[in-house]
Length: 107
Image 1 (cartoon, one colour):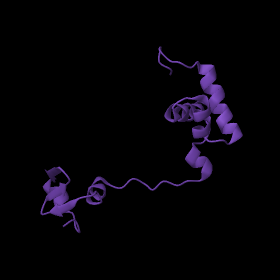
Image 2: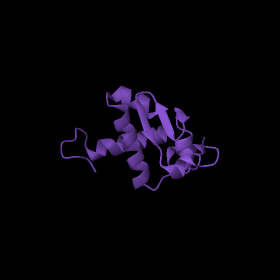
Image 3: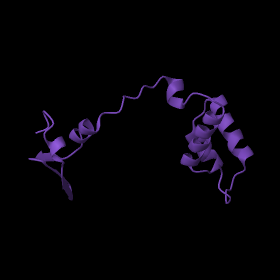
C-alpha cells in the first residue's frame, strides 16, 4: 500500500509494472528512462505480480533456488576460521554454543 506522502499514483505504478511485464523490457531500463529508483520500480512489479496472481520473475524464467540449509550448516559455511569453539572474523569473534561446536565435521 502506498504511503500517504507518495510521489506516484497507484495508476502510474500499475501501468509501469504492466508495461514492464508485457513488453519484456527490464525494470532497470524503464526506471532509468523515468528517472525513478530501480528498487522502487522493481517493488511495483513484484506487487503487481502478487496482486494479479502471476508467477514471480524467478518462477517465470525457471530459476531454481536451493532449499535453505539448516542453521548448523549455515553457520559452518560462513566465512571466517574456527579455533576450537570460536569463530574468528575480521573485527568480530563470538563463542558458538557447545551443541553447534560439536557438530560432526565442524572442527
